[in-house]
Image (cartoon, rainbow over all chains, first blue to last red; front, side, top):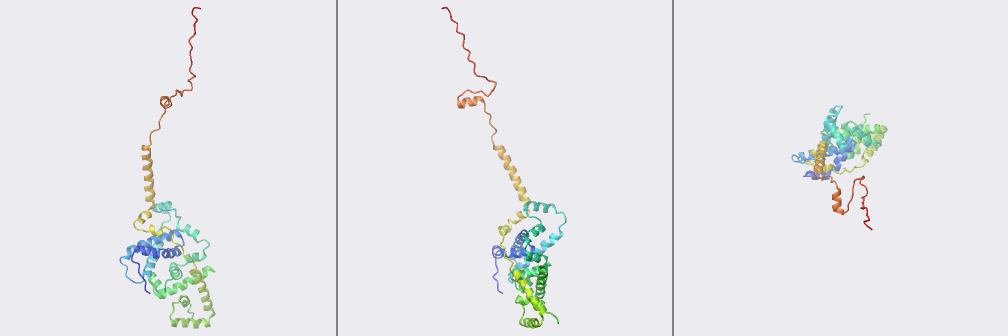
Length: 167
Length: 137
């Protein structure tokens, strides 16, 4: 697959901003976290473009996106029960409620989104990359740094779990 | 019979080679269980693919400009700066505002040319008419 590689950060933001947001939204389930993730991804793209080697640009881009998402998940898992002062500041000012509150609000009534959020991360990202982003298995393999056979299995198992969650 | 169910999703996604497609179709023709799984998988695949594409919220990309984001990320800093600026503005305004003027009776006299008194105890002017003394006649 031949891909024209955007050369500038602005082009990446313009061409892929919305797609990154949709990937981020389906992974996180809420607008605030998805917006933060888009900004983090664009920062990483800006830093990474200089050393980008021509290849599967989208595979590279989605790999950055899922890595940023996983880093955020790890960061939240490390967060102590009572927020640090810096966190208190942030919630006071940003008018963004904590992610779990936002999660409940936004996904209410959206059964498919809710079911997606219940999938294990590796199944969720594979299904979203395939069905929401429309990536080929090979591109997904690049994005998640796994063999194509593993991707194939994760997508099928993810869909099977979704079926169970939705019935 | 081993069920090649893991091939079902890849088949729907057009990700099987010709041999794999042949193997799966042969199996489906003889296995109601896998045929039902194909149908159910197709249903959930369509459902996920029907999720709407969301619009990118305004400002997300422009805020991702590296010059701006470090400030936005520490929004407490912005609020602190705003509060400090407001305090300075109020202090300067207080210094620049003239002191309240007091009006004296003489000011009013000079401006309006009338004699007034703000003293409620000040009664109407008493006119003392000197007694007319008839002299002589």
